[in-house]
Amino acid sequence: MAIEIPQELAAEAAHVIADKSGIDHHHLALTLGSGWGGAADLIGEVVAEIDAADIPGFSAPSVVGHGGKITSIKLKSGHYALILGARTHYYEGKGVRAVAHGVRTAAATGARICILTNGCGSTVPEWGPGTTVLLSDHLNLTATSPIEGANFVDLTDLYSSKLRGIAHSIDPELPEGVYTQFPGPHYETPAEVKMARTLGGDLVGMSTALEAIAAREAGMEVMGISLVTNHAAGFAPGNLNHAEVLEAGREAGPRISRLLADIVAKISETELS
Ligand code: 8IG
Image 1 (cartoon, rainbow, N blue to C red):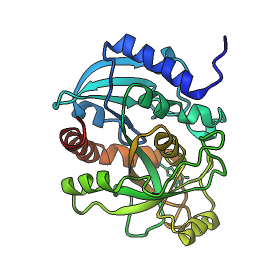
Image 2: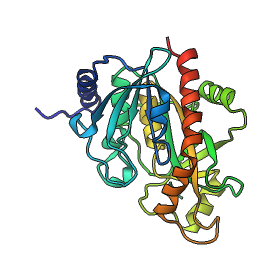
Image 3: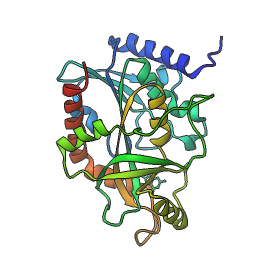
């Protein structure tokens, strides 16, 4: 029988994860975007690594530099983190259900906190490649929602101010900014970047906002952290290319991985029961 309801597919995926990892409850979920992949090794001890393709609802990644594994990690505190290394982007054309499936699955494994990371462009001239920015809010410019039906979820404190406070206790200098999700897969035109800037968008990218909404719908507290990999189009001389983005991620990798691991450790010690 075909499964029609996204939450049921997520529950089925969570069962498979419990089966394959031997861990029946995960406490916290992380999505590691461009540049953030190295954090997995610092966060804790890998308990299980599962090919996303072996879990219901996930499919193989379609972008070089994006992994395809779901990893179960034991933290020093004794809690378990689920790393979603298999993000589906909206631009893949698989629909919003596929985009939201990872965070819904994490919620179904028991996770109550969701940390979303990404690589992005910047509309703030002082925030060049290598800058890490804590998300305070987002502009969802995809013209869609991962939520189906009349479920009027409150997004007032979507990017939890409590979790932001914890991040600031690790790095008080961490700037906060508004993330703008465009549908992609093309980068913005300079005019679109100017529009985002005018609307209050500090960062531009192709992920995170839809996932954050789905995570909140699923009852999770959300934290978002971006790595600026490039000045957004028109905010620096020259053109954008994917190789430059990957290089900025590689260069910043060790530093931002350490930051994220420290934030996860602090959250696990103070926020998880
Ligand atoms: I990495 O400049 C990365 N992802 N939309 N614009 C958009 N997505 C991005 C960008 C960018 N850089």
